[in-house]
Image 1 (tube, rainbow, N blue to C red):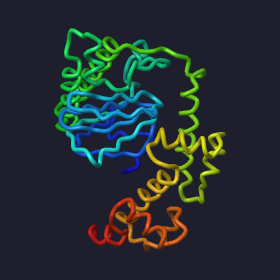
Image 2 (spheres, helix red, strand yellow; image 1 turned 135 degrees about the vertical axis):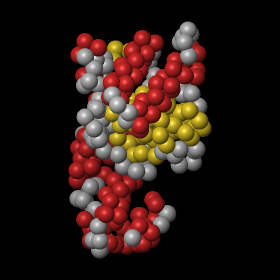
Image 3 (tube, rainbow, N blue to C red; image 1 turned 180 degrees about the vertical axis):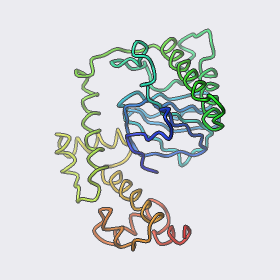
Image 4 (spheres, one colour; image 1 turned 45 degrees about the vertical axis):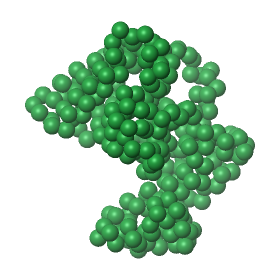
Length: 282
């Protein structure tokens, strides 16, 4: 799995990231922007706010602002497209509803059939996403105008055809739990070098260690210590591949208390040693 920061960094003046992939695994993360994934071949495992589903061809998932989500599909093969975009470019009168969620984050075949739609919304959205990817890749003249028009059409299709549940976020118990876990994940991302314990994380979430462990694994798909180690390993890989810093210094810089612990953890998660990774790169 690769770590993904909660603040998307857009490469141009237009707020959108687009990627096609065949195998996709990202750690649990969240951001204020919208993230949509569409599977056009094979299968993809996606978890959003503790609900996990394997999406198949023609299905897609929608992560709204603040949703904690992760991908874990190392045992699956798929062809899919993912976009992350900010809704800032949309006129305020048409903005993404702030206090509502779609009736499901997973628009699968069963839900689409139950909605009795008179259009093939899955196919239409899939075509839009592929057009967005094509425009982003080719960057033909005035492609930003085409991107904006496609995103507006995507936005309109979702709001018109997919029902939503409106609720007060401040009174939602599940939302408050998610907010606590967001705080913990943010803390880990900024303090992974330190000796962070399970008790520290549980205290930050204002929960007992047992309850915290269960909630964290449900939301992130792995234990707290495994998540922390994944973050540390991802940071270490950046240094291994982009510097000549001695491996022991990298281990200590990334929060491991010994080179032995670093090597053991790295091999368990990446199936090779840090030295082997560096040797294949340089």
